[in-house]
Length: 162
Image (cartoon, rainbow, N blue to C red):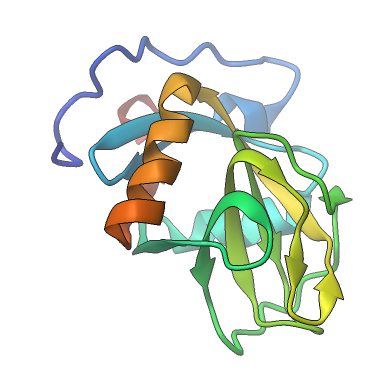
């Protein structure tokens, strides 16, 4: 599905008036699937940085050490971010940014059980985005990436937010 086509089955986002970040709906197109996500107010610095990157295009590959997850390797990129709202055991639909240190900088996209780690051992990362629509396609995307290889991924503001 092309990024400029409307997402099938996704209804307009419902903003949370108590949380400006939750009011920002992010459309994620990964392989043939689309998801809608909201920013986490508990990670304000990570959210602020990621917003400056939008629209953000990359390749999504399957994790090597962490279980049912996919990642965007960012190498030695140093965003100068602290850990915020960090976890080592994210849930399906949570998207994390690991700011680097023990392992390379990365974005982790969880579709099932994840114990975030590198070859050096357990890690924690900042949970900054949560998928709120399209979660029924997470496992299918994960299996596609596992068996068919890297998929294009695009993070962009939802049309209603532009």
